[in-house]
Length: 207
Image (cartoon, rainbow, N blue to C red; front, top):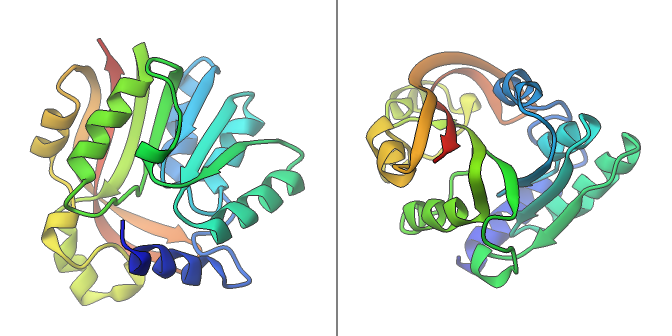
């Protein structure tokens, strides 16, 4: 990823408040308690709100992001909630996660650069054990129309960085689909996710 991409997120996370709030994503909050706690990975975890939620549920949590500033705030949030998370900074191919080492993975608005997003999904796929669960929520390609009407809802402004059901079916073709849908939701997450947006929600179990 480029230095400009890293700087963008360091800048966003340098604000005194938490960019997307301190509470977990609602879809994750709904789905994760349905899975028996084990070891979970949070890619592109930012300031830690979702990782901290998982740790509070008894999960052993690993997370990573390219932003040092995000990590610093995540560690502070974990301490505030009296939990610990293992948080690495770097790109996925720089980290030493072992294949089949996670029981679950949560991709919550993990909008990787368009050129690498499917490759990242395939690499992350390998880290999940057979029977492991992925929980995913991110903006769909239909979201572009909502973002153009109201920038407060957030999300990428280029179509290729957004997701489709077909892409997820391809990227996670070795998963049993438990839930896969596109829907409109109303977001209230910190300063940068506010308003109506179009998202893809996916829950799958690795075969």
